[in-house]
Length: 108
Image (tube, rainbow, N blue to C red; front, side, top):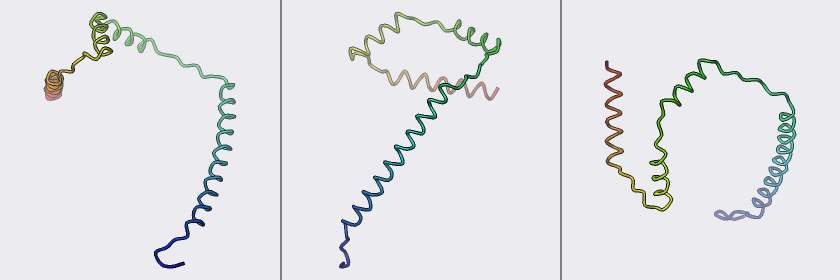
């Protein structure tokens, strides 16, 4: 072999052999994973309980959320028909005012 030339046929055959071995390993691993998933599906589940305090907090957060369904429907319709326009200036103003409010609360 001369300097500057490479033997591509040897590197290609080595690469093909490595890919074939990798594919075989992946097939074996996926078979093992499928067997493990089947075994997990048959195993008994663990019971999870939620405290009454957590349930009360969830209900309180839902009760305080007033959703204007008509506005949601109109925004959804305008997004679907492509007429919705984002007001970047209003978003930036709100972000800045929220950040300022948070900073003043942390300083107090």
